Length: 404
Length: 94
Image 1 (cartoon, rainbow over the protein chains, first blue to last red):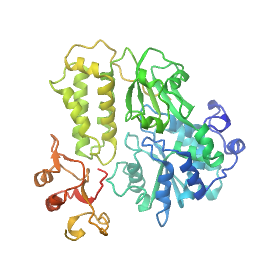
Image 2: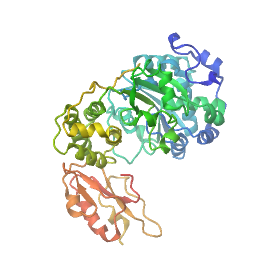
Image 3: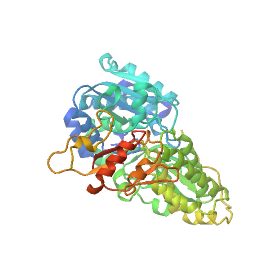
Image 4: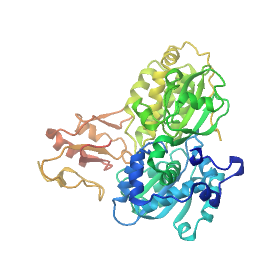
């Protein structure tokens, strides 16, 4: 069944798969429209952008609306540790286009917007080249826009806002994009990997996906060969780390899901399956499929402070709780990491991170708060030592980023 | 209980919840976090449901607004100088 995986086919060094090779390898999709939505429901496919919302439900909510609708294929990968979307677009652009076309016909949209991060040069070039290979009547439906660089640019209301008004900032909801999105029309915003999964399910069926489905992950940090890997759904986290060249050092914890994901202690993480539903049952989140390994020699407090500082800086400063609450969290973490905390910083972190969720227009503060709460649990002892100003002998360099 | 249009206060066009049918539905508070500027009138007028964080931004206690507080909630909605507070049919997402 490996012939049906995203990244099977020509080797990455050969560049993007051409339209002809793509059709020779996979044939044309056999499921479309309502039958496809039903298959997606049975497949259990969840969105791969981070939120993990069931794809079939999203499609139905747009399909049920009246009037013209729009599909927005989201390829703005703002998460610093993640590269899987750009790798997918760069190598298998036709899978993404297939998914977008299938989505458009299933939800009743004529217009498709392809939203690709401005910094993803190769991915955008591959997508444009692939688009030029498609038949003209299909090509005419597409509009390609480049998303501004920024963590929040890929958030779905920000993407819609950018298409409408050139401002990639989240908007208040309601209305959500499925109610009023691009041009005020009901809009399906779907991550490019989710669309590529749809393109495979439309050919091989939902049974195939349940038994042999895969996902793209970005493995980074303290591993031998950081990069993007395709693994079967349900692969244990430890195995994913081994696949990427294994541990380069003893590992104390994994950051799973990206900056808006959570820390899991290595012992507990090793056997957890990389599967959105299983992780959810375990109170975790697959997020955007990032697995970052923190070596035993590193300071978890400092690593978390680095991430929280970045997230606070990436706040687009529209909502008070995100500006002040997240800002205060990042500052307290910074003081703790540096060894000069104020007397109650640890207690305040507990409270602030509990108060933050649900208090922004988008989920940016929720993600940051979740990350901090997981750190407080996993690095509990280190936090107490830092609060007690006992000094920290650990390596305080940031978590390795940018595995391309 | 009065007409639902009284209950919802000032809202953006199109954001008014549909008129309830049958049994009166519960209402909960919805904040427009982008509009909210932390003036704090809501916490003053409805302390049972709204607390403020140390920067003056509201934290709503979970659950719908109890029936006996609806008048106060309505007052808080109309007092918000930023038009950032609404009453929506429960359950509220945030």
